[in-house]
Each structure stands twice: as C-alpha cells, then as structure tokens.
Image (cartoon, rainbow, N blue to C red; front, side, top):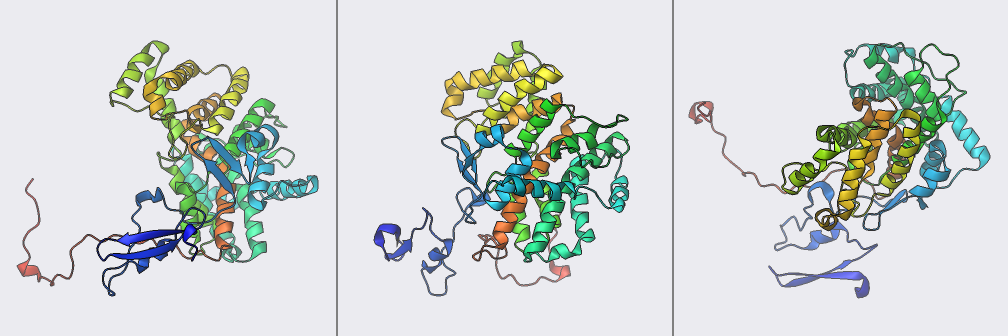
Length: 436
C-alpha cells in the first residue's frame, strides 16, 4: 500500500494501527470494519446523520463547489447554459454527457414532444381527486400510476426500455403538471400542442382558454425555460437520494420518480420559495425591514431564501434568476414584494452578522417572485421544481443502475435499545398508561 495515499488510524482501545487507502479524498467505510476490539465484534462503522459528510456514489453529472459558488452540469457552468442553452438541450447534456449536434437535438426534441400525450384513463384518475387537492399530491400519484400503464418499464436493465421511459417521463411530466393545475381550477384540460416548444407547450396547457392558436409570451417562455435549467440537477440532494435509494431495488422509473417527487414535496426541500414569499408578505413594506432584521439577529424569526446546505457563497443560480426577474417584471409589472427582497439582499451582503454566517441569497429567494408574477399559485411552486428536476432524477437513476459498485441501499444503524428481555405474560405486565 502507498502510505502517501493512505490514512493511519490508531485505535487507542487496543493500540493497533490500521492503514486505510485514500481515493479521491475519501476512504471506504467498509475499510473501517477491520477495526475491532474482539474478533467477535461487528467492527467500526461511520455515524453520519443525514449523510452530511458521506459520499454514497461516484458521479459524473453535476459538480458543485459551495465555497466558491460554482455549479456545473457535465463541466459546463450553469451561467453559460442559462445564457445560451434551452432546457431540452441541457436535458440531453445531463443525460448523455455531451451537448447534442443539431440532428441529435432535433431527434431528441421530436421524441420528447411526441410523448406528451397521456392515456385518457389518467384524466379519470386525476378527476378522482378533490377540487382543492394540492397539485403536487396529484403529480406524485399520477406519476406512480403511469407505472401500471407501462409494465415494460420494469426492465430497468434494458437500455432501449430506459430510453423510451426517459422520453415518456420528460414529455408527460408537463402534461401531468398542467392537468393537476387545471383540475384545481375547475378548468377543462388542454391537450399538448406539438407545434410549440417544450416550455411553450406547458404554458399553453396551463393557461390557454378559448384562443387558437395559443402564443406564449416569449419573455415568460424563456424565463420558465431558464428556471427549468437551473433546477435540472443539484447533485445528491434529498430527492435525488430518494430516487437512487428506491431505484436501487430496481423499481421502475415511474415509482422511483414519484418517491423523489414526494421528497421534494417537503417544505425543507421544494417548498422553500413559498416560504420566501410568505416572509416577504409578512414584512409588508420597506419601513418594517429594520425591525425584521433585528428579530432575525435576536433569533426570533428566520431569514428565508438565504444560506444553503452546500453553498457558502452566493448561489450561482440566484445571480441568473435575479437577471431573469428584471425581464419578467417588464412584462408582468413589478412585483410589489421585490423592493423588500432587494433591501434584504443589500443588508445581508453588507451586514457583518450575515457575512460571518455566509448567508447569501439562494435559488429560492427570487424564483418565487417570478412564479408569482407569471400567475402561478404558491401550491404550484414545487410542481415547477419537479418538472425541471425530472431529467436530473433520471440521469442519476441511470448512472446508479450502470455503476457496478452500487447495490440495493441498506444503511446501517447504531442500536441503542434494550437487549434480550424475557417475554412477560399479559397478567404480569405493569400498566404503562400515564394519568391525564
């Protein structure tokens, strides 16, 4: 073993020293199993709640440097993709590792576009939900239901089957999302239109009424396309971890993505931009900002949309969204909450309290303002997030399936409960009920 690329660990319980190989600045957790006091011991394990410092895979999809505020898909900076690419072009890159040629992009776009239609029975399934059902709950359920329409999707090791399900999932997710929205508004469903772009088609299915043909506003169409790009993948976050974990059992991609979307549904993940809007609304006007900042510093409330589990610098996605916001507001009118948001950002970037804690704006800080200006209700925010992230989930799922080192997910635990108690007959058990 090359000692320059190893870690020497001395167990002070026994005095023994172990050499553990280092690869890519990591050690393998299984290499710690050799560390034990007695031969009958299970061996040393890592304890890492929420996997804050444990790598569960090797990936070539997304690179993040949180200290320097860098996000790259397959090596391309997110800023370049947002400026020059489209969502479907970026999706191809994420899935295949390279940007497509013109012919490849045309074929890819054709396949996705011609898989946007849903089986008519899915409409009946969606109709079964209450009129006020949350669109995200409908999206999760309907995505899982697609598994029953495409039983061949269970052949997850078949390359052609995976390719077909990829077309279907990316194509149908916008239709499911639009139908969920229309159902919640009591509006008739609008079918996909193959003459529109991916994002334009989605806007048509959402907002078209009686006009024909529907022409989406190009500024809003572009803005939503950029937002999909910014949300397309983000390394091993909560929902991606759910996708990989469920997919590791070789479950089909529909139920695996439903699991990922369920993780995204949580307010700590996909609902953060809604929390930003609620915060800005509660502040109400610029005059109340100083008092709000005072309460944040006193620990009485939280500054939503600032700080990130990964980024310890300005979230690069937030820079892009801030520029897009100006374009959107020229069309929709200026969101009255924007002035409050700008003032909060100004304070956070200048105040030593926030600088010391590395509380910079993240992707959620401005995205909610844009969604609201475009006419989306807050309960559609996580749905929009899920649309963009679908391609990332699929790419991570495929990478996991083709990684020879991956197995079915099975974390260990540190057991702290009682051991080997004698069974107590009913008549001899003391009451454990507490008095009210």
